[in-house]
Image 1 (cartoon, rainbow, N blue to C red):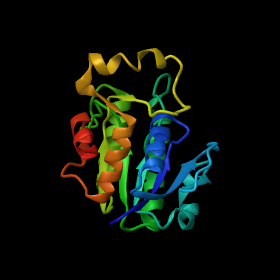
Image 2: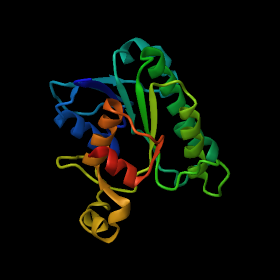
Image 3: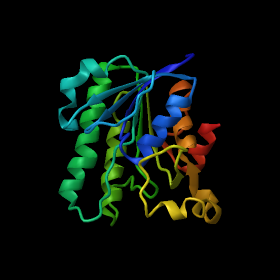
Length: 217
């Protein structure tokens, strides 16, 4: 496979935007479709945008989601202040609905899901968000994708040129990688690892920070 076409969700957030900028800068990616609930203001020869206000209805857009080699699902929301039912609907239900639509349009697609460090694969732990993301990972792994990978990054340093970086986060960008190098990586590495997952695969379905770094090389 010389080059790939990819779908990215969550470009209006920090992770998705960082992955997007890496893909646009990467010669192995020939086309990018960003799928958002609201518009992301960027023009690039490789880039197309599809607005889907409700990911639970993604099946209605299968035709527009067809013709891609990889899907990088970077959309997500903080669980702070949310009840489990609401967080499950936004995190689990919408992800699975979108994944099904993408798979129907692209039977040979590689799907990558960004969950997070300490995600609970047992689905039985005390942390609500970790259980929900663990269930999401588990259900995605049961789907018949060409490949399915769950990324569990720690601290992620933004890509140069990013707009979607929280103001409270900026003072610590330079410090955290120095204090916690084993649990830190860059969004360039995350994006490159996702690209390589499509191009050559990886022996694990669940990738911790060290796996993401290895796959990015």
